[in-house]
Length: 144
Image (cartoon, rainbow, N blue to C red):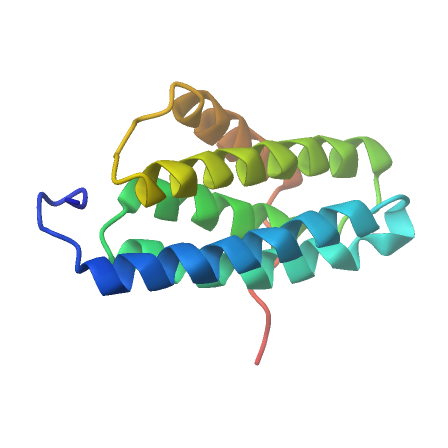
C-alpha cells in the first residue's frame, strides 16, 4: 500500500492505524449521539480531542486527505463546543456524522488494501471549511 507521497506504508503500522482509528471512530459516534440539546455541546470538544488522534497518525503515514478531513473535524469540534445556537450545532453535528461515515469507508478501503478516492471527500471538505468560517474565530484548541 502506498501513501500520498508514493511511499510504501509498513503493513504493521497500517494495521495498527486501522485498528486504533476504528476504535476512535466508535468513540466519535458515541460523542455525536450524546448531543441532543445545546447545553450538551461539550461532546463536540470530546469529538475534537479524539479525532485529533486519527489526524496525527494519518498525517504521519502521509494519508493527507484523511488527515485534512480530521483536522477540519477537530476544528469544528472545538469551535462548536463554545456555541449555543442550535441551528449551528445541528449543522456541525450533521457534518461530523458525514465525516465519521467517510472515515469508516476510508478505513475499509485501506483494510482491503485499496486507496479509493471518494467523490464525497471534496464536497465535505468544502462544507466543513464553510462551517468553520461560519463559527468564526473561536478557540480551536484545548489548553493543556
